[in-house]
Image 1: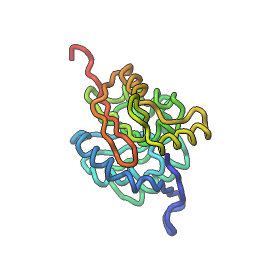
Image 2: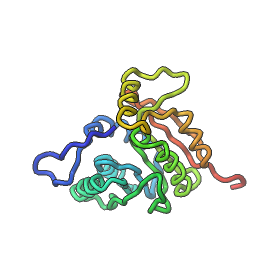
Image 3: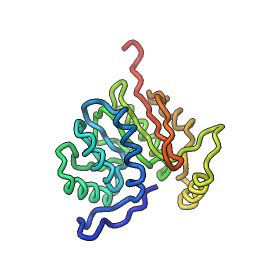
Length: 214
């Protein structure tokens, strides 16, 4: 879960900072380097502060990066980080609510970090639905965050985190991988890889399945 704080003194007033970004960005980047296509557009859903977008766009200059978020304060922060970064492949952010119609019609990969547990289940379903309409066959849908797995013991810290989320909003909470995968499969995806990440997080890599006969 992102905890936003103002940017450093002297930074643009709209910039927000999510401390977890500094802790997880390199581990995520290592996965993305291997999984993302060699060219094209990456749509980041729920970009939050915009720090991941700026960091990944700088490291993956062969890809165009489209950040998005439904929160106006997040959009302002994303744009502040974008302006500071001065990267030609980092596009202006767009307002995108995962559970509503999307303003982006096509992308070669979709990235969503730390959203599924701090939003209603309808947002995860909307993410799957939108990704199914936006990605080509073989396209990557990448999810990162804490999840619960059947028959795998959940770390006590994740259980406590889950309880705190549900106390804040009963619609929030850690999602079960089996339920997320079933929702993805119903919308044309298969779980390609599950990668253990630091701090009891996971990377889930889904691929859009080609229609029969293609």
